[in-house]
Length: 376
Image (tube, rainbow, N blue to C red; front, side):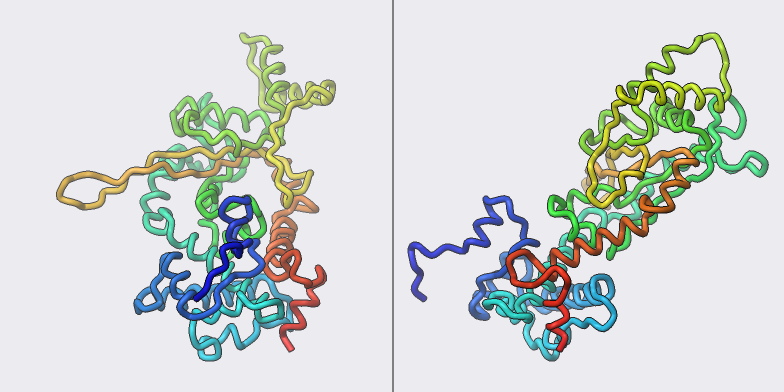
């Protein structure tokens, strides 16, 4: 094969050093089966190996199912030529079709490969290998401080006493379903699988606003979390400005006792009179409503895995988890209207569809007409 000294793969170079992600590549440059096999081998899978080939077909099946179930509207179908392994024949054909010039099959092949890519990275990380150990070591230190009382209900700390904090809800966030994780990675251009930091976590809903800050202090006092392991750029506080909270605390007589209702009254009054000085810590999320309010931080815990080896050594690594805290009144507002989770997910899915099925520059319109045309 003759190679031109001035011919370069622009898409690949843009991905290597130009800041483009693989999910935004519009066209591959695989011309034949030999090149396709080499591409897959460098990617991590040898199509000559039966086990690797089975894995690639499994990822193909998952990608087709995800696109069909999550991104397409009723009546839309992934072309059978690409969705049916018998029609496709060779998994390498996906690479070759994704390298052709324009056309619906090129666009669909490209889309399937990108979703396969997301599944590959999601299912080959530490969590997929050690999910039980990670969840137990992260969640148990928190759950041991959660108590259920038949009269008082759920509390953080003992049911009675000055350290008791009555909770309206304590929820362990369900392990993020694969489809949800795929959608998030497809929708956010800056996100890659190893930076998906909220696979596990907890949501705490307090009765009072003041108790949100008491929960934070309880976590620190009892060393449930180490603030040294916090990931600063992932913290989010759109609930109540920290500068006004400290001012309110400093203004109160230290020898006096206040009820939670009184503390909330002091906090809201301070905010009402000083809203122009309020300093929130907002991490912008293009899919979240401006009306969504909460406190969130992502921290890490050192997880140790006994590998069962004769040397007695264990595998250890830091793993991230999320803690969300909000008062009940705000929680109710967050679950309805534009701030609701359903609308949040809808916005994500719309962006994922646009990015994968109608990438910029492929000639397809934003209204999905290019997608529908492929079904005929």
